[in-house]
Length: 538
Image (cartoon, rainbow, N blue to C red; front, side, top):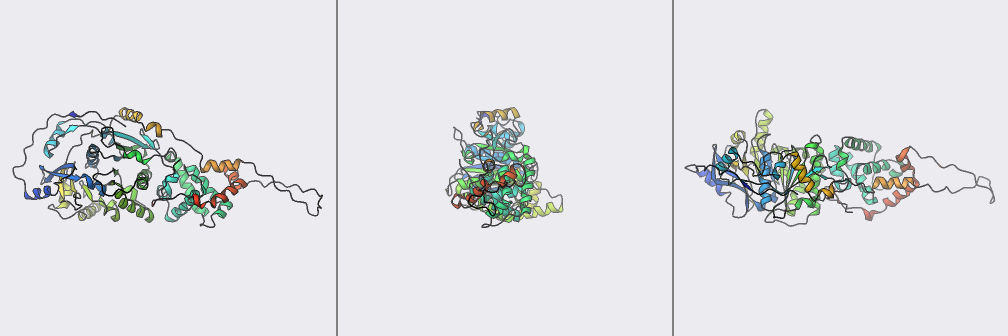
């Protein structure tokens, strides 16, 4: 974990002359954000191009587990909004998770650079700006990047999430669930992709089909589709994301020695070409947190706030079962003290059932260059409560670093809609140098725990070991017509069907015996969450 540098003061910003007259509409909006308890400061109310520093827009700390949405067109300042919220949460002792898809969030670990532009923005919004970085951990998926590797076993990832990664249809997803069911109850650990491939191949053999009689069947065509998808995933280098040591999501809940929350940044630029994979991995992190954390109800401050960037990738092409699982997870994880902010371009990227759970909204500018853009603008306006603004005009005229905001009050009621000029982050608004990032990773206590992959004995090795055992000698049978003293006729052992390891596996009597035993061990079946995930602790 990095140790943030001590605060460094910027030159005193020029005093901003407050507007001579504060319009009644601004006073009314500001009254809706005058919270008594701790809150995050977003910026100043904006009306007709003028910011009013005495009218502050804020989010109560205690409602951040009610989830939120940060939306807006590319280049409107969404990333800086995430950074602003993340560093204030860290100051309040709340751990934060940020997915860094473009590689420009790493600056949260370093103090910002004082500049005339930053000083001017601070004066406009009434901010006492000083540079400061946050205690930060950097992660990467499977070691694809400089961060500490995050891996998951196939067993814990579960059939629903893996079906999403493999782009399976609902029938194929159901068949994959059957494979997991068989492996779970048979004690066949699915740590990596080769484990899963070995089990699927066995279940399409005559012996495997016999084992599945009581619980369904796996067609050769469906198995072929799944195996081809697994092969493609492996060839793309994604096999490194599955395996051990499996990441413990409790690592995301840590605080620094000075009491500030640790900001966990998942570096994703190295896997930008696999959007389905990284968006589904983010969902695995959330599902695992949901499964592991106890119920706590509403707290004074959340245990973790999770920013889910490029959220539209999660929902695109998702099956009905997958969408239902997302909706239920978002609805229920609130009571476990976790807040989720989905980050995307327009609210229509998020299904209505999920959008209904997002009580805090920060909407950056939208563009209306095409008929589809205009339709998206109208849909966005319809999701906001009534306001003093003509939102269709405001949303197309906002500048970079400005947004329309509405959040939940301390009593859970929506606040007035407020066009807002946002504060400047105190941390570096840009990526840190690669050498500095690598140094932070090397110093982390988590690096030694997760850096090196481990290939333990699991389904593939168990099947291979049983196939390698010598076959028992056949019981001799008397020749036809031979008496008690007749010599038995010699018999040749049957040759295995197919070649190599797979052929040996499928024809091994030892494996057949093992499969029959495994298929009856119902008591060993692991339980799975509503998302099909499961943590296998060793």
